Every structure is written in C-alpha cells, then in structure tokens.
Length: 153
Image (cartoon, rainbow, N blue to C red; front, top):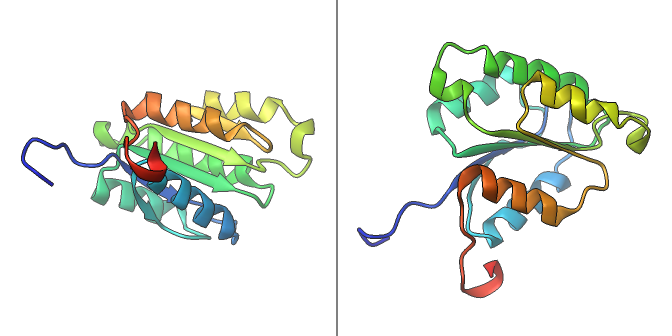
C-alpha cells in the first residue's frame, strides 16, 4: 500500500453464539472481499464476549452478524445490548448489521427487524433480502467505495 492510499475498510464477520453454520460466513466473506473489504471471519458459535473482545481488539469499521439457525433475533438482541451498553464509546458506536434467518417462522415475522433495530442494530436483513441492499447499506455505513478493478467492480 502506498503512503497516499488509505487502508481497506475492515469488517468483522461472525454468527451468533448458537449458530453453527459456516457456508453463510464463507459466502459473505467472499462477497465482501470481492468488493474490496478486509474481512476477519470469526466463524460459527462465537460467544458474545469473544465478539465484543474482537471488536475491541480489531476496531473494525463495521460488524456483520449472519444467522441461519432461526435464533438470530434472540442471540442478536442479547449481543447488541451488551455491545451498545459497553463503556467504550468507540466500541459501542461501531456500525453493526445482522441478517439471515432471524426467527424460526422465516418471513412470517416482519416485526423482528423492527425489534432488532430498536435494540441497537444499525441495519437488519431478513431471510430473502436483496444482497444488493446489504452491499449498499454497508457501503453507506462505512463510507467504503468498491474497488474499480477486477471482480470488485
């Protein structure tokens, strides 16, 4: 990286503590990296305390939480409350998004997105959301401009 280039926009990627799925994380990591983000993928079943500690240590530009087990609304709500209540103002202000299958009844629970935003998430994407909307929202939150060359364009 030359002195005039800025560092890549960093995204911390994880599931919630009860979610053991990994393909969603692999897909999201590849999608984000294609768009020029630097991704730290914590993997599945990450305890809240570990996610918060990694946010503290890495100071990412944004956090993306993906859940496909149907318990994202429960675990996500608990995680975001802990994060937003943290005494470190920089840590508690980091943009955090959650998406995927957030409830066991899928699209029949539209109220879950509102509840998760009210709990402190900056954006919520329910099962079946448009991936372009996810990318646009992440770009807006981080001020990231996608790379021009290659697959990231």
